[in-house]
Length: 241
Image 1 (cartoon, rainbow, N blue to C red):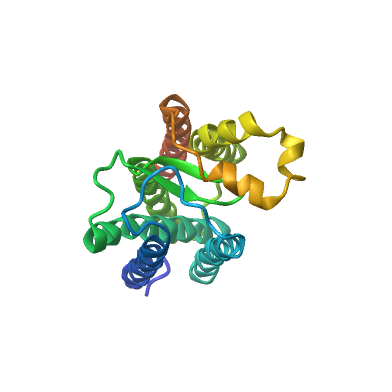
Image 2 (cartoon, rainbow, N blue to C red; image 1 turned 90 degrees about the vertical axis):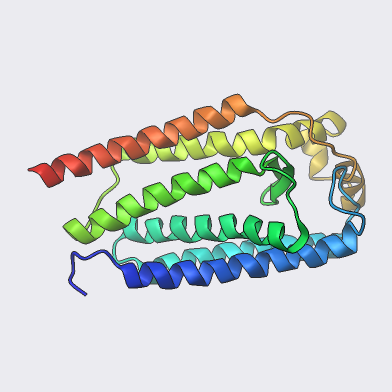
């Protein structure tokens, strides 16, 4: 492969790998829902044993480790490693929902609420939101991979990093604000760390999503897209010189 050629073979292998991982992830969720939600998944959340909850959180962390490791061994520069991490994450997340739809007919629509993540707190939101973010991640990752191969190395400057990080934090707030607000209605921030885990789990199991903060989500997405726009404009101008 020429140094400046786009790594199509790598792209296909990684895509197939993370489609398969998306199936594994969806299969695990199918098993969990059979145990916890035999009548079908819905809010409020079913009570979950603490050892099972800890196992699930560690499983999510292990998945992140896989994504980071694949990015590290696939990319040559830091920005390319970051790009492959984003691409892996996006493909895995998209096909996780594709396979859930094929296996159990869920979600009913793109506006169906789901538990998206559990680290460091519970993230909830309509299914369409992680789908849109995944498409954004693919866009950024392909720009970075292409120009890293074209120029040998691409650096993301501090303005672009600041926008990407700020946008990501705002997106996370949009997914965690409603659940965190619900928990803080029952406990103070200090009590969350001191109350028995069973009591926290009992209150959490009564949570029903009330509002998704679309304003925050759109602001976060907009900031990230503006960072991508700045980065692409910089790289395109470089190619014109």
